[in-house]
Length: 258
Image (cartoon, rainbow, N blue to C red; front, side, top):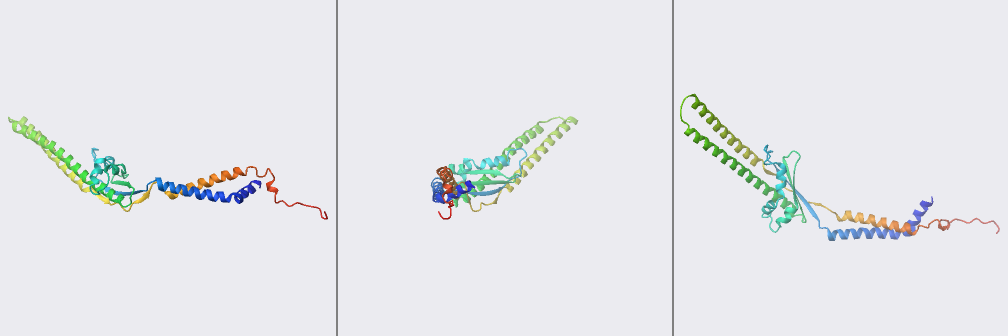
């Protein structure tokens, strides 16, 4: 009972301190956040990835890392003049979907109108670079297969003799050539399939605000201000009940006729 009376006493006597500390704490936290913390806006583009490469040369994890490279940022800023490539590379992240069929290209930027444009620019840049890498990969494989084909053709021309041994040898060369042609065709079709699958699945929608919010910090500052005021108020009334303050309004009984 005494504790409840003390709490009511604190609220009656120190209400102005509690209200003032709450308002000051909230306003200070809001103002500091607005002054020191720059707003950030996030936009995300979706890229449809090529089928997973069984050799591991091209994989969704590697694709996610290539998006945030300085080279990708330098190519992307050509579509959005006035943006620093180094700043862009520091504010972009790439992450594959669980099934490795999509690549999320996320950009955080101080202005809401530029974030979607930068995300789309990076996505289209990645698609263009990825297709170029696929073409280069196939050209290297094709050049190696052509060299093997020429070597086998030279061996066939240089083979002399007749009989079963020569027939068997010619058959081995022909089988090797057939495998080379088949491997080249598979490489070409696989590369074409991967290039066709790469596309911008979804352009970035409007950016959304992210990071520290001034309103949240204002609420936190108000709560801290109220807590500090409560500590001060209870400390100032620590002697409540010891000096008889709770008996100030207690009625006094007197004898009738005195």
